[in-house]
Length: 148
Image 1 (cartoon, one colour):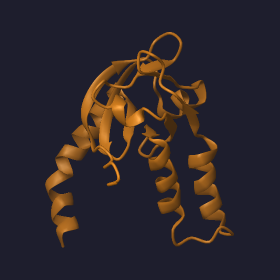
Image 2 (cartoon, rainbow, N blue to C red):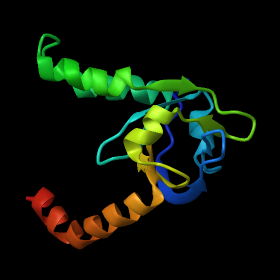
Image 3 (cartoon, helix red, strand yellow):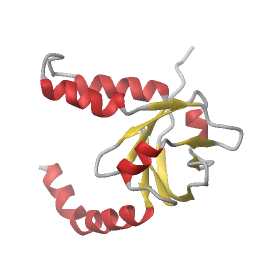
Image 4 (cartoon, rainbow, N blue to C red):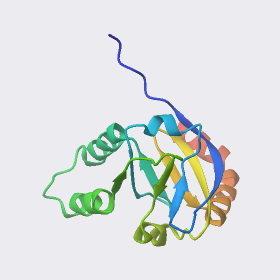
């Protein structure tokens, strides 16, 4: 039997955090998280959400080529795995985000969820808009640099 292919997570969605710190995973992205979702610190000031399989792979890739005795490797594991939560989506496709993760990402109420191939990112909406504007300014130069 052929192994089921993982969905590619794409798109940008505006969402709102409710009074109980829950965010609804956009309906188009929910099927990927039928087995649950890991949410942890992301980079550039966002939160990252992974499928269980995706989170295990991410941790493996993060540590590949590093010594477990390295203080930097231990710090990175703590930053990612130590901050992570695991939850099943509720009946409305929501996940509850702890205050410590919301504080890390500066998320108050208005959010943007983006699909980033094998994970989602949860951003404070204003922070995402600012980051996206910066990203768009340098997109062509970045593409050229990576092509060489």
